[in-house]
Image (tube, rainbow, N blue to C red):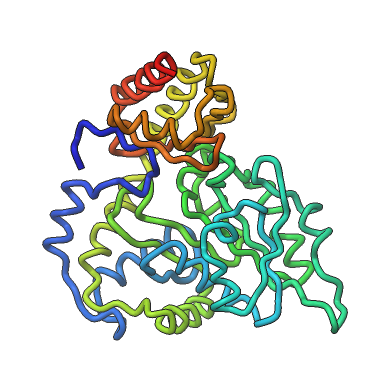
Length: 347
C-alpha cells in the first residue's frame, strides 16, 4: 500500500516487520499435519507457556479458532451465550449453527461487557424439552463496543460461577494482549480460569496471518481433529509460524503506543464540534466516532476521507470505527485528524 495512505480501518491491515520477513525466509519447516513442523511446534509450545495452559494449536484465523472451540465444547442443539454485538455472533456468519449445530443466545449490553447476573438469567433450566446452555463465550477486548475491557475480577467471577453451573467458558481474545496491556496484567493471569482462549497474531501483533487456540491437553487434541475437519490442516506452515513467534515474543511490548495514539486521536476529534467522540471511553486501540451531527451519512464521510488518503470503516449510517496499529505513526494521527477537520469545513 502507498505509504502516504493512513489506514485506520483495522489492525488487521498491519504488515509483517522486516524481522518477520527474514524469519519467514529462513524458517525450518516440516509437515504440520504429521505434527513435525518444528517452527509450528515451537510457536504452539511458547503460546501454551505464555498463557500457562497445557497446550496450544495454530489455526489460520480467529474465526476458525472460535468455531473449533465451540465445536469441542458443545453438542448439537445447545445454546452459546454471547454478548449481543460480539464478533462470534455478528461477524462469523452463523458458523456455530452450520458447524456445531448450536444457537447463539445474545445478551444486549451498553458497553459489550457482561456481568454474571446478565448471564445467569438466560441459562436454560434443566428441562429435557428445552435447548440447553452449552457454553459461555466472552470477548476481550470487545471490538464493536470500541475496545472495552473485561477486568480480571469480572472474568474470574463469570468463570467460577459458570463452572459451578457445569458450563465451560471460551474467551474470544483476538486482542487479549491489548486488554492485558491496558490493565497492566499478564495474559496468563487475565484468562487463568477460562477453559479455552483464542488470540490473534495478525492484528496488533503484526504477523501476516494466524491465530492460536490454547487450553487443556485433551481440549487441544480434540481441537486438532476439528481443525482438520474444517480444512485447517496445514503443511509447511512454519514459514507463517516463524512470523508468529516474533509477533508473540516482541510485539506485545509496543501495544501501549497504539493505545496512546488512539487516545490522542480521540482528543483531537473531540475538538471538532460535529463529531461525537468520548475520549475517556478509549481504553485500547479502537475508537468510535458518531457522525449523526455532521449532516453526512457515515459512508459519505468515509469517501471524503479516502480522497484525503485516510481510510476508516463505517459501522452503520451514524458511526465510524478507527483502529490504531503498528503502521500508524503519531505524526499520521495529527494528519488524519486534520483530514477530518477539513471534511467538516467542506461539509
